[in-house]
Length: 490
Image: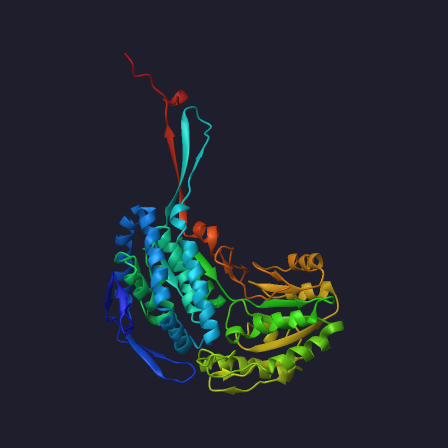
């Protein structure tokens, strides 16, 4: 498996990008330079899409067992290079070893699910209103899919689109986030090259968004754009794709709710909230953003939560027992500190943390927060927990639904049906009773409502997204067309 990631990957070849710009890849914790890649420009992107389009024609016809074999071989290659992949996730994405290991496992599960897709390209035969006619419905590959991967869970959230796209007969062109070009793109070129994927079916263009960001969407070749990232960028992609009548699969931001009802098991709720808030430094689209706690148990919850959050180890992500590592870059740190300061000015109290050392923001907890403060209104995307009290079910449902996001969430109650009743009232694509908001299973529909995205990933639902249907009818006997028929017999 190739480990030199200084080049881009087009049509089965590792080549220098044609841009005058270079992409400098650094470790977010140490600042160490990892690799410099000559960036791709529009001409490289065009070559990648043309190679993908040409290769896809034959791949769509490939026997299902051969498609599956490539996916299964990719799993073998990944397993053989597990430590290499985890190491890159730690040093490039700032992942703790704990998070990187879980991300690797989730990625393997995605591939295992995708390996079944070549045999799940089901069609139908349906009755017709016309005598002697047979209606057939075929499920076909879309063609070429453009994938824009994020920096927070770069490996998992890239393979979530790559594997099902290839398994269903498509080709892909990937533009990874500029902070994670290796774990969000170039690693997959190496993996699938070693797995024997035919040339041209997977291409990776590392480049600046300002140089090729719009063009990966507007290029005439791709039929669908798969994007995971921020809501503003997702809306821009949706506008560009919509103008060209392209499909999109968008998994965007989330201002996710964690609701602790009056009868909740406080200890269990604290357990869940600690994981859902601080896992990967809170840099997950599903991370808890607002923790709503019933007034009657608010003080008890806050005391336990703060005490246990204070024991979390933060710092070097390469150390095996580190639980909270660095944010991806200093811009993210400064953005969050600004919202902390603004919320404190409006009356919130910092009960834990609030300081940063380089890109490491220590676990932070604020109380006295209201639902209209900056930390509640904005997606935090960092290791900052805010505790908001409520008095009634009606109040918490109203606050939870106050913002135009709906990705994930959680509700805690000792009465399952009571918790479920509240969960039904939250406008979100995913929600979990007596658990936390960060859940992803390869066979379950993953996606959001409102400003949190369009479409669903995983299982049969991503199969629907990445394929198209064709109606083909067969008229087995002569059909009479009434007054439009002229008798030509002499």
